[in-house]
Amino acid sequence: MNPLRLSLLLVPALAACAPTTGLPSPTRVTTVVTYRTGVVAAGDDNPVLAAVVATAPTIPTLPGRMPWKAEEIERNQVVLRSRAETVNTFSFGSTVRTLPYEMLFTVISSAGTTTLTGTYSKSYEVSAQALLNQLDRRFPRVR
Image (cartoon, rainbow, N blue to C red; front, side, top):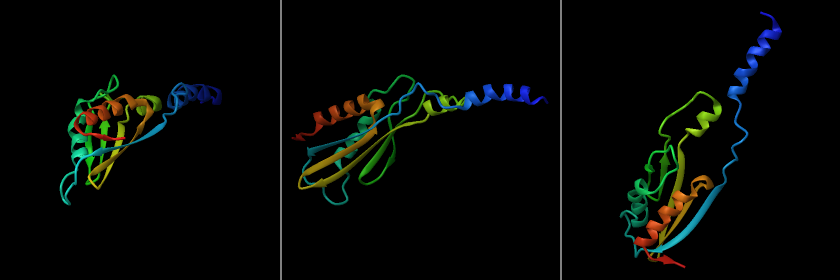
C-alpha cells in the first residue's frame, strides 16, 4: 500500500484514541470534620461510618451516573462509587468518562468524638457536601 494512503488512514484512528483536551483535570479535595458520637466500644461499628454507608444511595449524583454505593468497606474506611449508567469504550475520552467516580471516607474515634476525613474529586463535591449535610443532621459537629 502507498505510504501516503496509509498515513491518511492512520490519522483518524489515532485522533480517536487521543485524550480529549477540553476536559479540565479534576482537583482532589480533602474534607475533615469531627462529630460527637460518644465512646465507640472496641469491636463495635463506628456510627459515623455506618451512617455514610446507609446514606450513600440517597445523595445526588451527576447526570448519567448510578447512585453512590459502598463497594469497599473496612473497619475504619469506606469507598463509595458511582458508576456510569452506560459504558462507552469507543474512544479514550469516552472510556475515561465512564470510569467510576470514587469518594473515600475514613474515621478515627477518640474520647467520644469521631473524625471523618473525606477525599474526593472537586467534580462531585456537591455529592460529598450532601452527604456531610445528612451527617450534620444525625451527629453534633465539633466546631
